Image (tube, rainbow, N blue to C red; front, side, top):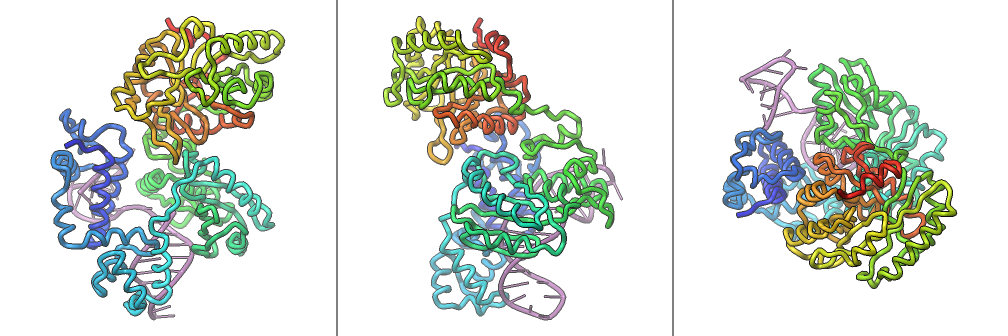
Amino acid sequence: MSMNNNEIADIFSHYADLLEIEEANPFRVRAYRNAARFISSFPKSMAEMLHAGEDLDELPTIGKDLAAKIKTIVETGSLPQMESSEAKIPSALVELLSIEGLGPKRIRALHRELGISNLDDLKRALRRKTIRHLKGFGEKTEHRISEGLTKVGTGVQRMSIARAENIAKPLIAYLEANTATQRVTIAGSYRRRRETVGDLDILVTAEAGNTITDYFSAYEDIEEIISLGQTRARVRLRSGLAVDLRVVPAASYGAALQYLTGSRSHSIVMRKIAIARDLKLNEYGVFRGKTRIAGHTEEDVYAALSLPYIEPELRENTGELEAASQDKLPQLVSLNDIRGDLHCHSNASDGHESLEALASAAREKGYEYLSINDHSQHLTIAHGLDKNRLLKQIKAIDKLNEKLDGITVLKSIEVDILDDGSLDLPDAVLKELDFTVCAIHYKFNLPEDKQTERILRAMDNPCFNILAHPHGRLINRRQPYRINLERLMRGALDRGCYLEANAHPDRLDLDDEGCRLARRLGLKVAISTDSHVMTDLDYMRFGIDQARRGWLEKQDVLNTRSLKELRQLLKRS
DNA sequence: GCCGTTTTCGGCCCGACTGTTTTCAGTCG
């Protein structure tokens, strides 16, 4: 029985739902949820750890009891305690938890009083209007459940951060236009720069007595007002994106921003640290007794807990608080550190710009170099270059470099990795280039070991330099192909190759965790835009976001180097 | 069920909004 971490986490999560409906000790429920969250984000396979005889109860959120339960799950594929719970309460009740406004208490009441066991029972009760007569329920609650029911299963998926930016921009301008508004900041996963966002958390500072939430609720793009109070409002926009607005006085700006930026688990640990110091942390400040001792800025808040400022991209409770307390936080790479772009398409293949136009755009960005990486012949749909056209492009770039000032155009290609791991053009012509970027563009469905070996064989070719978009995923559109990333990274290290962190907001591949693994292994990455039109060059910042989330420092990134150093690093010995 | 910079027992993050109440429970983030 091979169980992966997500499957174990799903079982704990489902069991937590059941326990909640059974009205078990809420802290016990939380223990299962915490463990589920931890397990699903834990990089090592629990099953393999058990196999290797490692102790799981050393891990956070996992004690002796849960360690034993994980063992049972891995060995048998299920959990006997959960099965006996399922025998007591209809498991379809768990589905009702996904209805907005229905929690365990109300579900239990519906089951006990009206015999409702599943979605169909609930629909019938709504038609008969019997729910409104239950104690604690009323007409409005009944209506809310009915509304919630129509939305089940239609939950919008998380939105790419680039799209969320476009939606946020006019909303921020609208909020700033109110004369009572002092300061507007987007917090949440948007500020932590996650690759996708589930909703927008917006913080506004204003004097007491303001009417900002009312003003916000009149924004033209709102589809539905979910809740509306004096200091907080929640709405859904027509795009499906939910927006939470919080209004606090300026004296609480830092504490509110810290709280709203999260992540949830980072914030929870912060509050625990406060408690351990006899302090209280909430969105209004850090308090000793009733006295606020910090809150104006986030720096104040962290300092009040004797911690250095932690960059939002690191706030995932994956070691940043420990690193902060030991003064070992990374100096994160920033957009200013970037000296060139190592993946750009011209109009020779499927790009839209001339060599000259790309070169001058890169120079305007202050870059020292930019490479041209058109597709190779196998990718006919993109008008990929054959040997002769590539040789012609090489000459054209040489000629262009002679007259260019302040920027060097590097000769490169995005060459296809073929079925057998060979490269799509002869070595003789690849050797004429400054370096190569190599990519998988077909046969995505190979098993993990076959795909990994295909790429490792390609790396054996001394002309191979950088592996483009290592997973080939398209966010919300195409699943990553199956590879053993750590094996590929170790293979790249052995051979003097590198991996790309593709900065296109639909790719972000390597993702944050991939970047972090590279850093742990000591492998440098190239942050590249994969530009096809001029404005794509600005995607660099999305790549930087994920690199920062992956704890990368300037020295971990290839294209923070001078051209001279870069050439040295790309040389394969 | 987890966990320990007062603790191996007794805590467990904390506050806003809504609806059904008339002081609060439930839900959510």
